[in-house]
Length: 75
Image 1 (tube, rainbow, N blue to C red):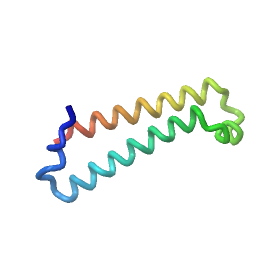
Image 2 (image 1 turned 90 degrees about the vertical axis):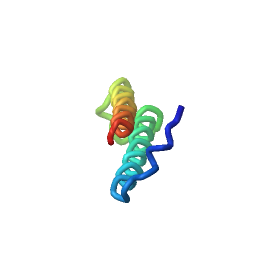
Image 3 (image 1 turned 45 degrees about the horizontal axis):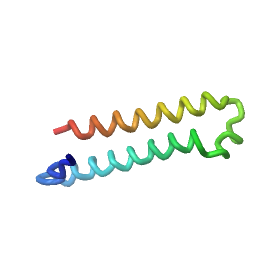
């Protein structure tokens, strides 16, 4: 279940850092999918093979979820 109690009783600084963390999560996921599926990236980076772009995209998506999990564990 989702726990929305993380938004309660937070200082403005903590709330800002939480929102910034969520924005960065979305950014990394979008960037990961862009590396995998967006063809103009392949045209601008011809030295990276197809499997390399997929590996970078998967790494970015996994990194985004690791950051999200660590964001939820903070006090």
